[in-house]
Image (cartoon, rainbow, N blue to C red; front, side):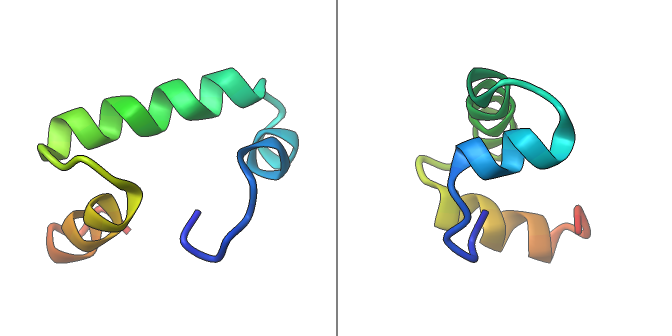
Length: 50
């Protein structure tokens, strides 16, 4: 995600649709109370999600 990999490529690797990837990322951002992917990455790193 942070490496600049497009949602479509992530979806292909996971075997899901691009929209599913977007929904999952949106849900994680809501759980982390952040508004962008960089904020999500920061939150995930600080809270041991990675």
